[in-house]
Image (cartoon, rainbow, N blue to C red; front, side, top):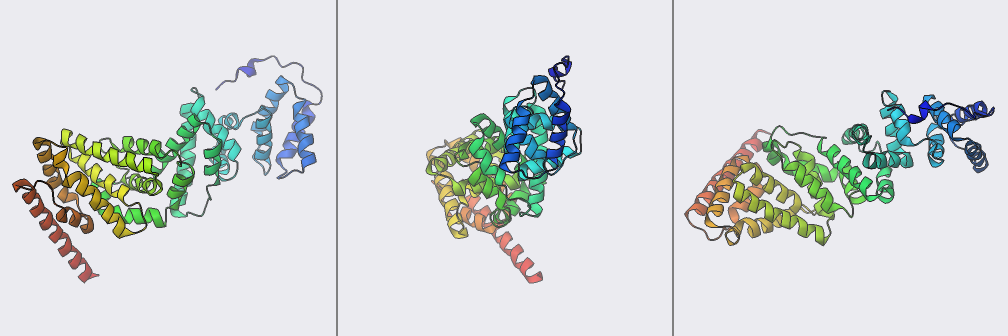
Length: 386
């Protein structure tokens, strides 16, 4: 983008300006400064007039990165000579750009905050900054999947405490989008077959998800869930792995108000499914309920939580659904059996009664038992060959 200041007639440039530029370059080669040296450098920068500040910012952006470059950039930003956002745009077409942003994420939190604020508040730059930031976040979290120790994510808590609300919301959504993009499923069958393995992986290995839930999303869990529910409620959704891990992580840390919000969402989702008669909607409901129920470190308690949800919402659905919609849900449940791959969840469906019973319910229960028997048989064959 063209800077209107470039059209200025450069006047009133003092004889000492060249000296200031040499000091800026020298400072970039020094990693740390004592308090006196820092004070003297800041006082030197303060004597620059408007034109000189503009030229100094251009000079700095043309310098190669060095051990003290970002310390100097912090000082330039504090004096409103050059912001991190302006610096990033100067590197827009450089291979150095993503390297610089990884350094921002690792240690230069004040500079990073400036870029997120600009992405939220500068309408002209928002799209480009969002692309730049999400690329950097994608690189970081892809690396964390392979090696969770490459970054301690110290920036997360800093941003949560310093960003204004609008910028924090943008920052949260970027992180949620980045995590969802870390894995794409071939189809929803994979989500049913891998559900427990994914949840265990999220708890035991992908600990950065919990860190984000505890440090960045804390106090905003409902907003995070709203984003996740909206993104997952689309045709051909395939980001199941981290959707389920995120729902589980948020549910594990949820306060009573957020827990109530999740229950209400699931209830409304059931009503919506009964109206649309969409199998995809029911599959989404079952997976989301399982993730939200897995809120403890005890597998049996999590299964009991799911059983309680199933009893209250499916077992007693006759109290909130008319006859036609009740039959619609039963038909969809039958259709969903082909997706069920984990016996422990299917056995809950087998064991819990659906009021008021009758021929259709018994037909569904019979098919449940038959599918459960198939899963048991397959498990025995697999065990015998291992």
